[in-house]
Image 1 (tube, rainbow, N blue to C red):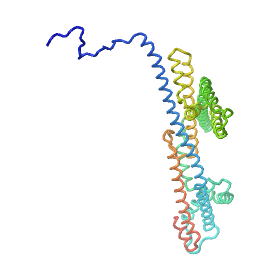
Image 2 (cartoon, rainbow, N blue to C red; image 1 turned 180 degrees about the vertical axis):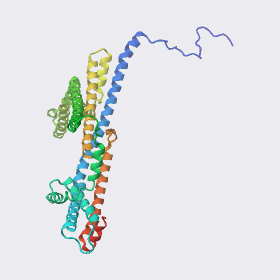
Image 3 (cartoon, rainbow, N blue to C red; image 1 turned 30 degrees about the vertical axis):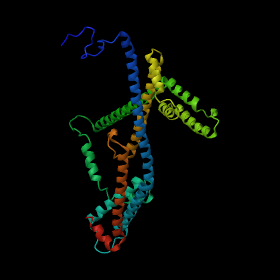
Length: 381
């Protein structure tokens, strides 16, 4: 094979070899471009997170509406039906036990005591829902001294077990032990109040932080709003139908601007203006890459979106807290509470209440029939 000429290119090698190191000019241009790309990525990530939080908040808002509607439509009627059954059963039992005993075999002392205790528990259940029920208050007053509540002894034992043991050799007088116990209770109350104040201060700090961030990003918020106002102002539209449409859009823009809701303004821009929703960010990133002072505006825009994300999360946390107050059967961990779980527990409560009312109806059947009333009461023994 003849030797290759020095001027002839080797087909096994590329026509041009890549440079080993980028030039200083390339490096200088890559840094702001990379910084702009990172800012764009962070912006996009915040937008996605805010969208997800908005969807979660909407789910909670819909859940709250359905919850209260179902409480009014299903739970309250069942609760009323259950309380009426409790009242009737308690009053019929009082008549049979103390006023007009049923004919036949007498009711034994043990059966009378246990049946009377159950009668008091029925009255207590009614008073838990209706504290001003005059008949149940009177029934309890007539019999609570002669018929201690069924769980009174258990409660007394539990209180004695929970009470700190008193050492008779501690050298303290009884009044000194009582003073020490009260001081311990006062200290526990102070600690609880301190924790509450710390939590309140943290909430206020977050609110102030959100306010400062919103103030820092006010220029970006105002810029988007002005762009929308210049394009959507209804006074510049000659067509009547188009003017009505733009009037409605401007109302939305005004509400979003008043609330400091940058995401809502960007969404209006995306839907109703030809430029993309990220145009302000892209323009700011390009200016930052060119060394302009738009980089600060870009940071403000991202900070404002971060503040909106915090506010949305705070709204969700507040709704979860409200449901935790309404439903003590919810789990202690807030991150495990979902709208689906809340509605499931409500459905379970309605079914259980309906079943208890049905069981009371069966007991009322025995009480309403004089032939079976005596045997039913004697079965408590």
